[in-house]
Length: 232
Ligand SMILES: Nc1nc2c(ncn2[C@@H]2O[C@H](COP(=O)(O)OP(=O)(O)O)[C@@H](O)[C@H]2O)c(=O)[nH]1
Ligand SMILES: [Mg+2]
Image 1 (cartoon, rainbow, N blue to C red):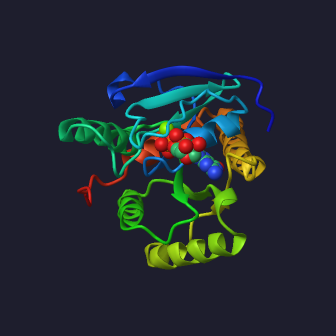
Image 2: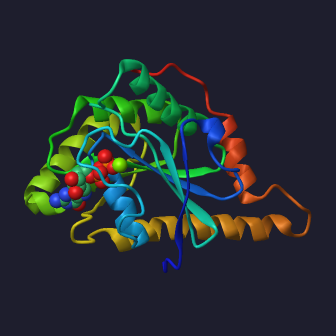
């Protein structure tokens, strides 16, 4: 997919401050410092678009970017070892969970996991939370340039082993490096596939009788999800 424009839309402190729900959104989440902002910059081909920070927990807002004027990339607040007051931490976790549970134009969540680490309990707990809510997701193992390919494969195998019982079919697994650009084509390919499916379904719905648009159907299916307790 060709990215002709990637424009910062807004930084929202909560779900209510997010832009309208008219464009499909692809959200990125993971532990603070996992490489979300770096990956978004790499995908968009715009260094500095999403703020990259060396300080864990720096990204406390829902950062929204509009790409090619027709879909959005969403950088969600990281979970984990966030710095700052407890109240502050709870507030931005709330923003991310509200977004994940209620954003009706959310098409797919990219869950980022650091490829150099053995499975972390916090990532597993977060995955479980997403699975319980049937949030559509793919897994992305980040920073593959930092460790050997064998280590990456070992950590992916260990992680997927821990989560396999929760799925009939495991979610798709990708690897990436914001340093080398590895994984860019594949991840943009996933977004492209989803957008193509939405467009195809919209065309289909238009004839002969007007049915709900594909984006409306994404919304409707999300409304059916049960509202369960958070595991944290
Ligand atoms: N070697 C390497 N470092 C990375 C990569 N992605 C991010 N980083 C570094 O990891 C730190 C956190 O990155 P950032 O994108 O701000 O993480 P975020 O908190 O998840 O948004 C920064 O110092 C980045 O330069 C990567 O693919 N390879
Ligand atoms: Mg960030």
